[in-house]
Length: 248
Image 1 (cartoon, rainbow, N blue to C red):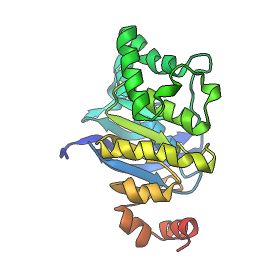
Image 2: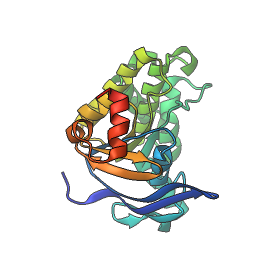
Image 3: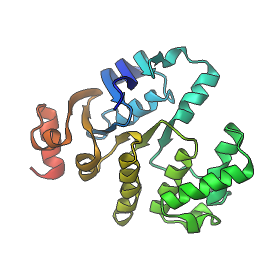
């Protein structure tokens, strides 16, 4: 694993009016790492994720991508940043009027100027990767929630990102569909994809993460290896949260 951070966060802060959502957050994501961010609702996890690719602009502190301060990025560099740091949301955000294949082809053709054939070949290869190649010509409305989320992951992969950010990707799914999405994410992790995952799926975090970050009240209160975080959390707030979630 390279010894240079892909993402570095230094004293990150975010306010919405008087509401301080993120407070002096520090963190480093190395290439190939999987970071799972856990914590109670309202602790700032989603806002933190959105600050990494500047969907939200920090109020204070710095986010560095490959050593460069993202606040200095031009508009075109920001567009490139968001290509290289793909994001998968809770809601699938697929275009309902486009087929699955068309959803995957759109950005590579528009942004990367791929030919229709090249984009189609790439899309089919990605649909195969997420187990949905037979759904290429259907519309999103005919898919289950789990299938739609797998298409959304394939769509993010179509831009060849270096990092994937996941914002609670299974929270909108029926319980029986969660496993199929987590299996795709686990496969990505095993292939070496750098991932920052905000999740309530503690089993996934325990099994797949290189490091687990616990957030509460706008702070990252603890960072630890999964076994240590779930078996021997050091922070009292983390202990309380984990005992309630997994019944220790």
